[in-house]
Length: 438
Image (tube, rainbow, N blue to C red; front, side, top):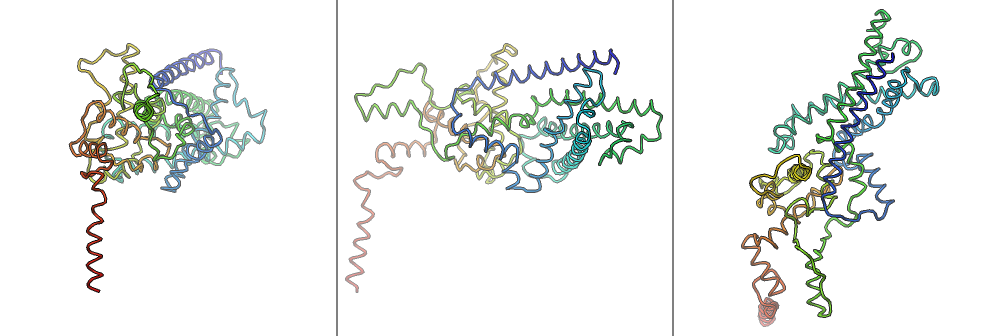
């Protein structure tokens, strides 16, 4: 590689890395809008969760083994094949060619051969995913929230992965000196296409594939932060910081807990809170983990497909809840950064997620249980519902009656506590009647 090409490579690399850094900084800044929560306990279990669910695709292989294995191929391909990118970067900066080969010897040929097999598996997996998504009309891929950009985005990423892997194989196949010394398991079958070309023509093909692969990786790197495929990066921290409490454990609102404590203990004085908030009105009221969940959503729709409310025709879709939370967070982030003016009409998270959706949730936790990367839509739904009830007094009439009964009678029914045992009186009469008959 000549000096000019090295300069061009360094400039392109620098620009690509700079814009990726800007995107990641934006996402990190937006996640920090959320309230603080400590999720650093029990580190061994957290590492175990990350290895099991992010690396091993533990839930995917359990629910859909074939789809899970295909996802493992794509994931390993993304992580391991990019090791080869390290060599591309060094070659591009230093003007060398396959700089690792003299150092690693036979191990280098073995590694490149392994990457080629993995690359072929990624191509096959992506073709199958494209077929499933576009030809098989699977219900969870046809939901209203996937119309437009989300559907297009999923196809773009799959096509790009196929193109990048193909460029990698062509690059190896057109490298005639490499092919003459090594026995490559995949590019060796493509090599005959370049075998009879002149030296200069084959070299041109190799250089073209090399630059295309490099530029494609930089484009992919900068596209991912705006795509649902951001989960290939955020799945690791998101599974690590999973809430380790039992899924059905209800978190007490500290404001309410202090009020109850003051009622039970007159000597206790609740600490003063400025502008107290009950529940979630907007993204600032969510925790940073809720916001990390929103950015980590894979939009696979498995949460919606198991939601009993959705399957019975209700409006609720846990996937839409996560997508709406992410969209609202992006909007708030832009406004705070001065990149977007305040909207004329006041907006909050309830502008995106309607009351009808929130009230439809049965809090069964099925969406949480099935999510491949441990996202918790139910926590957002319950906290937004709490805001409707406690700050807006916007609960259904039936719910308000239930709340009054619980407050006055200690039970959801319209019977005084003194009448709670009356149901047994009839049993006693019936029992005496049966004894007399005997």
